[in-house]
Amino acid sequence: MAEEDRFVAYLRVSTARQGRSGLGLEAQREAVTAFVGARGGKLIAPEFVEVETGKRNDRPQLAAALKRCRTTGATLVVAKLDRLSRNAAFLMTLRDSGVSFVAADLPEANTMTVGVMAVVAQHEREAISRRTKEALAASRARGTKLGGRRPGAADISGYQQQGSAAAAAKAAARLSDIADDLRALSGQGLSLNAIARRLNEAGILASRGGSWSAAQVARALARLA
Image (tube, rainbow, N blue to C red; front, side, top):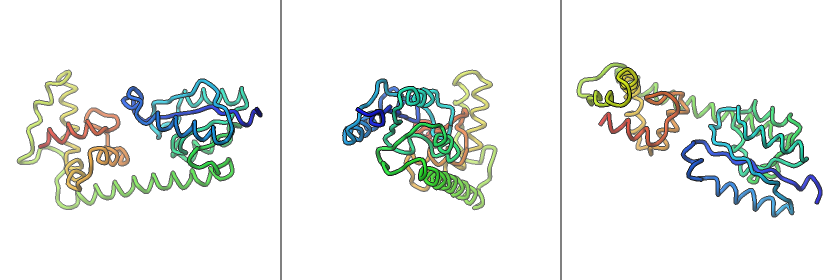
């Protein structure tokens, strides 16, 4: 079998919870296996699995997969193009790495076209973030006072019982700061996952810092109820 028919699989999930549960990995694995089989190719073990966020470029498993491709002459294969990144600069760097790569959902993509596709993907992500921030700003402009505890707001003092008093107090203050954003998004009838995604896209940190998850949104809304 020719070297160009050899493939190295790179799979990625966005959270540690997904990584532990395997959620999303099996679907990616099946797509990659079917794609390579249809090409009459061969997957080289091992597969490389990353538990990471799509906005970060420092991915040790991807680096290892690329190294494996360079040392074996294989092609990097992913289930979907966004499994690599939605960041245009990162994809351009990958394009120039000397490693051939292919996405099962877009087999026609190549090193010439992926740059344009990456720019479009980056533009879409920035547009979503901008629209989210504008929607939150419009909500504030409708007369909602930000910061501090509003009359009738839920008493979240019980939140201070978690962890150290200093950390709990800081988290409670953060929840108060973002209460209006949470209420605005919840009022739109969005799912917990959608609210978490909107908050992350807008760059709004969770109560204790970091990215939002559906579970964190549910807990925060419960405390504000």
